[in-house]
Length: 327
Image (cartoon, rainbow, N blue to C red; front, side):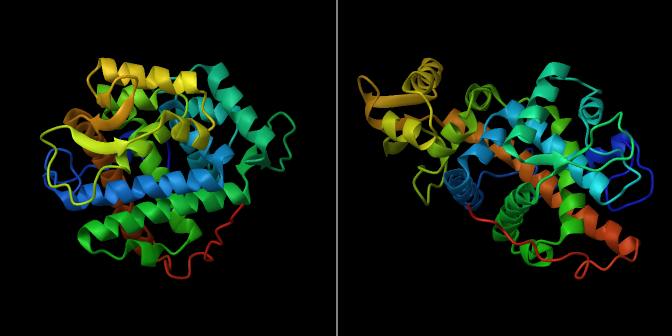
């Protein structure tokens, strides 16, 4: 996999796994299930849905597990080349090579995803002297959106442990490039993340399924101390969800039906009416799954700061503050 942007030293593929000590706040093996962490996850779900409301056509590129992995890999390749021109530019061949160790997606799927992002304007052509290749780069708006995504996760980590990551980050472009690339190369090849628990996978494998799951999570009552029984979310009209995410009622009902058959969702009245209860299994699995992502971000942040300090790179002045764009 070579070196990651921001460090010109060569790194082996195994270096991207970011080994840690046996104890840390976000390890799914040591996390105690405290209410403070779930409160952060609930607020994060609200923020992600708010981003969808502002830019639904952009967020749809990360609204299922397959799309999340492909889109994030594309962005990582963009950042790696942008901040280290010795790295190959973003092309269809580079994207296929990124997934080569496992190739969980067909080549046609990867190239079609690239083409769709180009058609929407999230990817734009990059000038090249070699006419045999067609390099691409992420648009400025795409960079601003992923910067907002990372900033929100760093702020969430700060809420858990009192850190100052978000303040230190403050839209710094070299930090964004380095942290994001480390996070994605870690998560994509970590089966604990890329192959979610069955209860979570039931949602995120479907079109816009991540947004459906976030709709459930953000409705969990504040101050909940434990997940030892089903949790009442109150009424959740299917029409509200389908309208917000431009989903067909049929698609949403099929997702709900599968979740009901697995005992993950239960309504108090027939016909998916009345109060909705979500099972403790889904909530527990979601928390442990999300802990893997937050742990990867926390480690990538620390490793990036150490690498920049080791290279004598000024972090505070390393990049201009990102201007977040609103549609």
